[in-house]
Image (cartoon, rainbow, N blue to C red; front, side):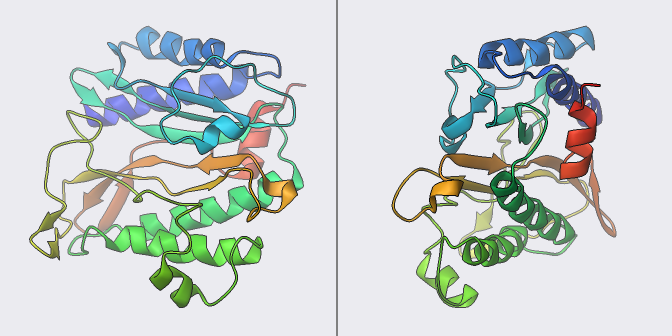
Length: 255
C-alpha cells in the first residue's frame, strides 16, 4: 500500500509538472494533483497540499494556494495521496516556465546534492539522525559557496548559523500517517534504522529576502523530498518523480 501510495503520488507530481504554465493559479495546479490522485484510486490527499510559487516556498507550511504563478519563478509542491489508509509524501520544486535561471539552478543543485548524500546515509544500523547530518554538511558547504555564510563548515554547523536558511530536520517516519507514529530517540540515544522502516528524505533551502541573502537569490525556496524504505543492505526509494535539472526541463518542455 505504501508503494502504491508512492506510485500514485509520483504520477500526480508528474502531471502537475507537465501542466504548469505561467499565469496559472496555485489552486489550479493543486487541482491537477487531486485529479490524478482520484483517477488512480486514491481517496484524496494524505495532508493539506502545499503549492507555493515564488517566495511563498520559503514558508514551510504554506497552504493558502491562492496566488498566480509568475513567469521566471519557481513553484514548490509538497503533496501526497492517501491510498487505503497509507500516505505518500513528495516534494518537488521546479520552474513555472520550465527553465531554471542560473541562480535557481545553483541553489537547486545544492539541495539535490544534499538529498543524494542523505539517501546514501539511510541504511540499517545507522542512527536516525545520520541522514540529517549528511544532508546538513552538504547544505552548509553550499551556503558558503552561494555567499550566504562565511567560515568553516564544522564551525558553522556547531554555531547553527545555517538555521535562517534551513530550519527543519531532513525527514520523518511515514506510514498510516504522513508523520507516522514512532520514537526518534530513546532517552539521549537516536533510534537505529532497521529493515522495513519507511521515512522521508527532504532537505531544503529557504532564502527569504533580507540583508544576509544576495539579491539574485532572494525569494528562492527549494525542497526535494522522496519516500525511502530501509532494506537489509541499504535502502529503496519508492517515489519516482524527475528531480535533476535536465530531467525536469525535459519533462516540462512544450514543443
